[in-house]
Length: 181
Image (cartoon, rainbow, N blue to C red):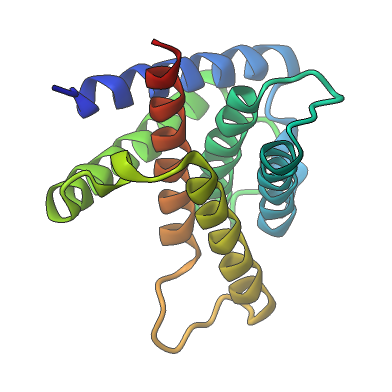
């Protein structure tokens, strides 16, 4: 029997740890990026994953797992940027950044638990390549919403798509860890 919540929290713990360490190394230099630039960073990572999945060739050497972690962390950065869009500070205190990270990680987990209940953990029967494709589709949706100046007629907003990408990336990491066992 799978313990999805435990697996999810373990991955978030690891992602948050990497985020905190990089914040110590670089500060919050990412605050200079517009949300659309963060979307493009997520696209680059997801596209690299797809290329490696399709070709089986990894010339850079960084593993796919680290790219999924990057997607999660860039999505959190984007959510923080959306919240702090009027805040002009380039450098955020480490504790504030960590609290914001925890806030969005908790919101993503809450959403996952609700959807996981309704969908019956259907993601466990999906291919990792399909999760990659779903992330890419969500990125294209976000880009379209950004091109529409954030306006939608009937669709979810940008933030909902970032939360979905976080969860798809975590699902991929869970499935990858189970395949290694």
